[in-house]
Structure formats: C-alpha cells, structure tokens
Length: 300
Image 1: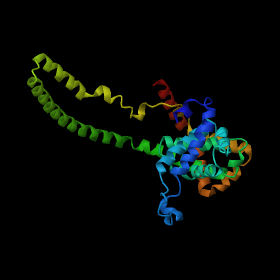
Image 2 (image 1 turned 180 degrees about the vertical axis):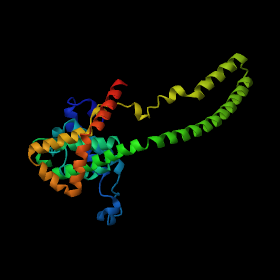
Image 3 (image 1 turned 45 degrees about the horizontal axis):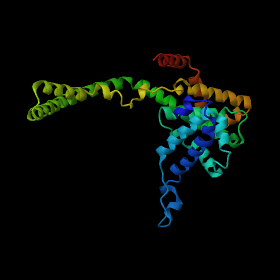
Image 4 (image 1 turned 90 degrees about the horizontal axis):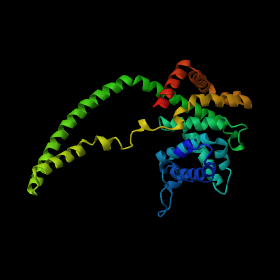
C-alpha cells in the first residue's frame, strides 16, 4: 500500500506487471468458494485438499486493489486485459469480489480505500469496456461504503465521552497493575542484590547493577519505539476526501450522460441515500472540520 500511496506515477511497470497479477492470483486463493457453501466441497475426493476461505486476507488484498485503482484506474483496469499475466477467469473473479465485498471493507482505512477505488473507476472517461456494464453495481457499492463511512464518523463523535470514561477506568486499572509491578521489581532487586553479593561484588558495583535494572524495568524508551501505534502513521491518503471523490464520480457520470440511468438502478432507497450523501459531502460544517483536521495533520 505504501508504495502505491507514496509513489503515484513512478511505479507504473510494477503496478501493471507485478501488483495487479499478484492481487488477482492471491484473491482467487483467499476467496475461493467457502467450503460450507460449495457443492464441490461436499463431494470432493478423499485426497483433494480443502479450498481455503480467508476473508480477512481477501479484504486486505482488495485494499491493495483499491489502492491500485486510486494510483491509476486506467492502468489497473488495462492490466486485467493482459491475459498472459492475468487469466480471464481470475480477472472476472477479482472484479466480482471487489464489488461484492466493498461494503464489508474494514472500518477506517479499508472503507476509505474502497470509496477511493470505486470513485476512481466510476470517473474513468470513457468507461473501459470491462467496466461499462458494471457501472450500476459500482455506484451501488460506493453508496453502501460511504453510508458506512458517514455512520462511523457520527458514531466516533458520539463516543467521545465514553472514551474518556473508559480512559479513566484504564488509568485506575493501570495504576493497580503498576503497584503490583513495583512490588515485583522490589523482589527482583533483592534477588539481584543477593546474587551480586554472593559473587563478591562491592557496594559500588551493586548500586550500578540496581541502576541498570531500574532503567530496564522502566522501559519508557523502548516502549515508545514499538511501532504499533497507528496514530503516528502518515500517508498521502490522509489528505484525500472520499466524499469529494464521490462528487467527482457523479460529475463524471453526468458528463458521460448515464447519470440518470445509474440513479434509476439504485431504487428508491438507494436514490434517497445518494442524495443524502451528496448533501453530506457538500455540508459546510463537514468541510470546515475536514480542512481543520488536514491543516492540523500538515502542521504535525
């Protein structure tokens, strides 16, 4: 993901000849027929291995595919037409799973990438033959994904007070744990003292050992370097507004002349949600909040 997000326009050959074929091939392995739903699985021969079903791996691979579409949608779709690199069956499977599983993308980055990938595909003009017939399904998937993105944003705002309450409870629990750890540290220090004195160490050497043990037990320096906190991770994707890309896709559809047809394919409920998302995307309060967050991120 990082290569595609940070090197746009610089790794075309890698994206077309390595990334797209690898995603298509791996997705077919990770998201083959689920054993419980496959008639073939019920009658498989005794020596035949079971078909794996790894939805989390599949969704991670679709994150890469959506990143590739955002990198260069025309290049990504054209790569599917290279039968020598991607068998036609694998290409069809990738497109099918991409649209089918888009609403199941992981909250946060996964949903954002799904929205960016679908919007990029819908914005292609003219639409590639491979995607022309699938445009109604692409728009339906995009509406579903953005609906979840909006709900997630609302839930995050409502949960702020709950987060403070949880943080307070965590502080109390952590304080109790630290007291227990301090007791353990005292026991460890006594054991070190006994071992050091038994080996003939002098008082100055003993103090040095205790100081080293205390520094190691404190652990502040190495805990900060564990790299597990996503809060500090930055990417060019952070500055991308998935709702603005959604509006760009709608404008592209109007230019292509199939906007009304696409909207009609959504049904009444889908059209109502589309209009609601459009109002949300253009909401001045949302735009002001996003601009402030982007400015804060750039200044960090």
